[in-house]
Image (cartoon, rainbow, N blue to C red; front, side, top):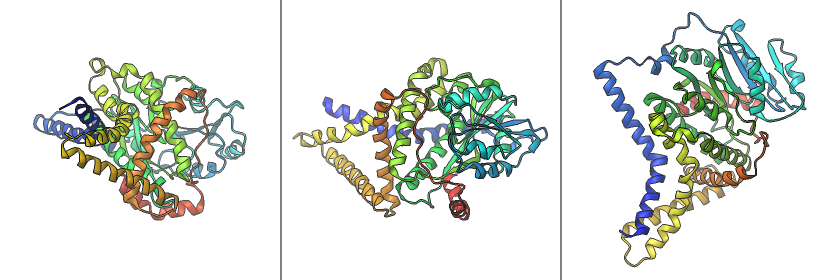
Length: 424
């Protein structure tokens, strides 16, 4: 086997392990752990806390919402907050709206149960979180976005998870509406989050979830630590910093945040590039977590689930095709390389055709998979260049459908069972 062949199989292994192999290995390790616990009757209450907690003494909590120019969703979000199944006297609602210059603040002033924190200068979400957390006095704080709907039982379910003292952060489940918008945006993103939700669940069953999504997550308030204002993935950085303090990130699939897909692929591209840039930024700023001698299984999960996706795997993916061509044109190459080339060609053609169908608004969920997969990985490469020119903590928001508009919300309400079923 020559150097090109060795390199080809190394790259192939990296891509396979990142997107498929880790999931398989994770499932096997969880099964082994469960068998061990069964035979040795080892009690691990933290893995059951989300479902079997004691609600006799509910703590006070703060529902923390950072928002910039969200006048269109204020009333819908507040209606959602008021429908939460939690004692009103123990539920404190805080909005931090720094820099907003629309009618967001005016609308919020109509709600006497809201603590409104506002300064005219816009420094970005992370700066708003750092400032706003100085006013939080409750032992637990739940972060959620203004444009997401959270289920009425979410707060109670999250609080249950904190019954175990080792849990420092709770990640709720993110669910994306795949139906009302159609197209590759919601279809591809929804399928992606379905797989992501399963991986997070397996990660937690093995040891700890690896990060939390900003749509819905909670922490013990004393564990909050200020982050640099130019942080792009504040939710991920904050949750992993807590895990590095020997706390567990619990994954609670009975507390979920539902949001709509981006309005189109151009808006989704902006969001993915920013997330990818934030991933690269996080890898650098959390570089001490790459040390398995210090962080053990957490380091293994972090590298397998996050670091590879945000660094070497996209490069490996796009090097496979030209390398495969070189191996095929070599006179002594094995026929297996021709088969790999055919499979890769079919996948890329499927992605290109999926892009064409998406532009024409033609629904084809099968072809959305290669299209969205390639789309995500291309944006990881673009994220590197975004990070190089990024400065400060502000960015242009990606446009999404207003999940609280009467027409839109009536659609997803009718289809809520299907949406929820896909996310489990």
